[in-house]
Amino acid sequence: MLLILWAVFWLTSRFAFRRMLASHPKKGRLAAALAFSFIGISHLITPEKMEYMVAGWLPYARELVIISGVAEIAGGIGLLIPRFQRLAGWGLVLLLIAMLPANINVAVHQLPPPGAYPHRPGTSGHGCCFSRSTSPGSGGAR
Image (tube, rainbow, N blue to C red; front, side, top):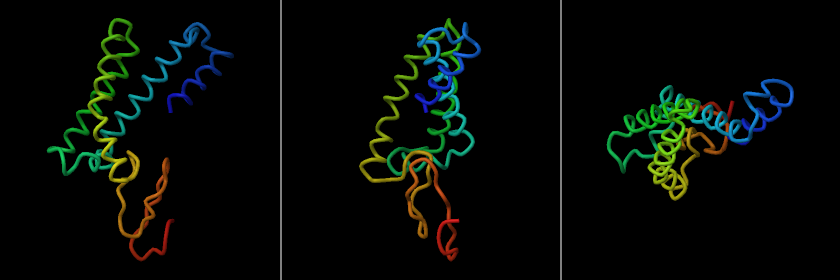
């Protein structure tokens, strides 16, 4: 996501917003701010898509997902405010380190990627970026 956003900003800077996107760090900071904010918002809108990553080995899974979403949004916004960029950057680094065990848990237990629902009877469980849902008796993916 970061690379795609950076590439969009690079391409945009060729035609418009040249001053705003004048340097690679500016493009990267904007890409990171949007990516973290978008992911944080997804944590708040559909926390159940992330809960399974920590459920069973940490208490208050839903609350942890919501807290991490708020922290991601705050960090993303902080990256856009010059006074808070350094603090936001280090905060996001610490947040990523804190979330690393959940991602390791997903890999070790071969769970679906973050954002996808865990395997359910009648689903393939595949779909790195996009998942299709099925209902029992539907005969497969829709």
